Length: 308
Image (cartoon, rainbow, N blue to C red; front, side, top):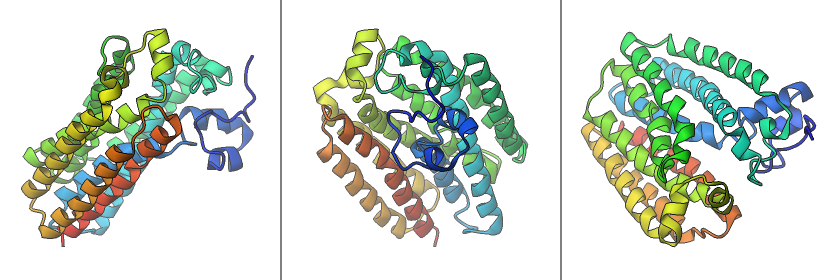
């Protein structure tokens, strides 16, 4: 039975702005774009801001740097929404069988698939407008990410490591931010990108533990199913690798000692996540997953301090 436009998505917070303030006609589309759950936008945006910060270390927070960060903020919002829309179009039959996702706009019947495709095109056009403000190298690099976006939703059907493909996709901004400033790529953004991939595998494994029982029943694969009870040990590996690579990227970009002091705060946060994780507590898994917004902020401020 189709849902009402006022039906809240299961994993959205009760006080989100979409359910409180958005017009009724717009709510299903904003929910489809996950505007009611902004954590994904933050996780997509932070690698962009880290990279811009590293590439602009000798400029500081100039007007041009702040404008670029604003453009990447807009781009992250619309392209995260486009990615979620595309993912839900591809996965709507699976989503209907999973308790946490059955209330999403497409499986619940609030939005038709054809309307979702139109909404996807509109979001991509907005993202294209942002991309076209960048230099030619960055435009080509940004457009190439569409390949990863297109194949990611299918990875959970064929591999237990779809989180690795999510990492490749979600951290593209670590390359694009640098390219937008410098017009090229060097080892610093490449290593930052690799660190972001390891970080994403960690946090999205925690997230995937919410759905592991349903995923096993319907034949969907994930690192949560692959790692199982050994997840905390795997988190030590992936978060440890991410932290080391973030440090190497900062060093290559010329960060000062304050950056490395900030990295200690990032290490403490990652250690707290590992110590706190309970893979059989979906609510705690969601809270820890969302806490990576704070990890992103810690690393960003470390980069700002490292530029002084």
